Length: 171
Image: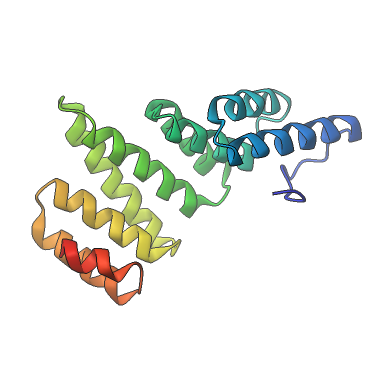
């Protein structure tokens, strides 16, 4: 991720160098699956520049991997609000709500799954990784026992060429 602009803002050169160093270190920790350390460094970075959509996104992915879904959802929501790769934000937030929903048996599980459906639909409407959005929405519909919708999603997912074998097996 070196060379990726971290913000659209013009920053003091020393601050910009520090932010880039923090991001490069955090990204290296993410690649090593050291998600907690990565999230800590990205939090440091975001204290210096809270408008860095890429940093918020990566920290959200760390929280997702650590199964800290509330924190992941918060970061992906911030990513969407910042306007950074909005379709990707809906994809990741949808997956966080889905994972949180299937991991619970309380009343909130249904609500989480319904929100994941909305996020996948927005992802698809924004034309971000449509095949994956259809696949994930199909899984959520299947889990909610919305079988006709799930079949329609898996069929369309297959038509998009996104891991068709899984689509056929779930359909």
